[in-house]
Amino acid sequence: MKYREALHEQLQYHAVFDKSKALLEAASKKQWTESHTADYEKLDIVITQAMLHAESACCRKYTKQFEWSPTLIQAVETVWF
Image (cartoon, one colour):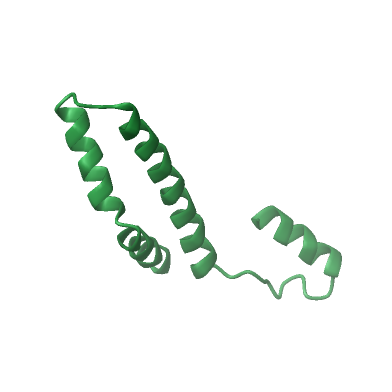
């Protein structure tokens, strides 16, 4: 649940819901312009960044399972990020 809450918080902070609603209206009324395309692409980047932020905020970054091996710690962190 932490991920969901963190993601929802980020999406609200960036007003993603309102912006996507405006884009949906423009598309449904067939009034799509080049500026809407640019807004859509920016919104896609914001959503991706919000997802990454939520994941990093709620997930453990370190594991004690490989505490004895710095090489394995680096390998695990490389895979995670």
